[in-house]
Length: 574
Image (cartoon, rainbow, N blue to C red; front, side, top):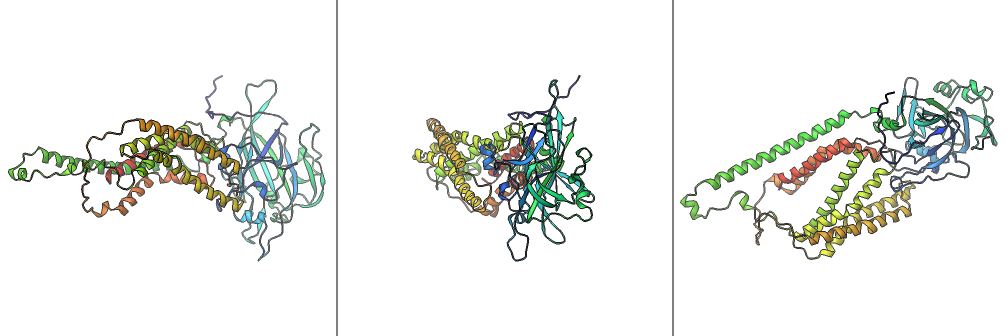
């Protein structure tokens, strides 16, 4: 048989296979909102909790820094086992909505447009939304906690979910048939169950196999078809939009005692393989076509070409004038005036003069820039090669931290070489400023934002132990590497320039308006921003709006164009 070659995520995420009837864990992550930008822990709201309380997943440093809080849930799933209107628990969501009264936490979350982010087998939940005419499936941002009614402006909670899981049979396994999860979709509904509460008893359709037991918490009066216990399981149908919206049915207000229920549907998909199950997430179901990125690159190339043409034109004009002047035979009058210097000779003795204000500051800034440049380059390269897949949550943040720490040696070396070239004497102080300056500024801002996140009760607040890990990375690895790089930098000879610097600096004549500081600052920021603003938008959208960003090939091209643009701007205005 001829088999096609499928792409496979390179590092570390091993496929998990399940036999029929095996428990498939559903986990909950932080709740996110593109309105407040402050994620909160799922169990901060009075939702159903698993027996014994929720248990935190083992998280890496990147997940903690990203605000992820992955925990266990009370939703019980079994491979290829259909479930109909299973009861989770009865939760008291708080007092009802009244004018002039502070709403309960669930209502607040719904009004702030918070979304649930559930996970099955490391796969994020896609959200299916249905109305009278359309069905929309979205593969980012999870599914909403509830909705606001257009007529009454009241908040209603999604207390029922249809969980649809696609699976693929594992090939080359003969004895025990195994399956792998390849897609996970949640369709939320709001159903006002009229019920009488009972003590939690085992659900009648459970098998005595020692696995976790389903509980029955209420007797539902006038149930929808999927919740009707009088209908045998084999004849039941799953909850549909028509059942929920039929005449006489109302949505569940986000207050009082609420019964939470769920359906589970298993669908076999022989076309979709485990190795490519993340593809639709990373492409966001082609919500952003590739031509948007190509147009961005074309726009950036136009800027580069215009700048290049300007630089070439200016250099050629000046070079021709200088060559014509120097090759011409001097007249007696010019000899008498001793051939006054013109062109590049005016500035050749001042080009490499150290800054008068602070050579140390320039050296530290150049060293830090080299460190950030190397960190960005290697992060993009490893991401483009597929090593930093979103399937490994927190991997991108951890890679950035790791590369920044390791590139401390580059920072120390560049700073030392430049500072020695500028004939600086306070070598130890310069190295200390390099090791503590930029990381100290970033850590101070990070600590202030962390305190604000703590104040709001957000899961973005980094635990104290994680803060200690960052300090150890800073002082235990980055700082020694900076000093090591500086040691080798100071051992090298100072950089030798092609021309000598005069002892007396030449007076700078008045400059035209387009060489003034405000204009050069404006243009020096505008053109590089114009070269990368489209990719920058998508990157920031992935940070703040929970989009997926996985077009690192485009990003690498834009990064190279950005570097060229910055270099050309520097040439043009210096």
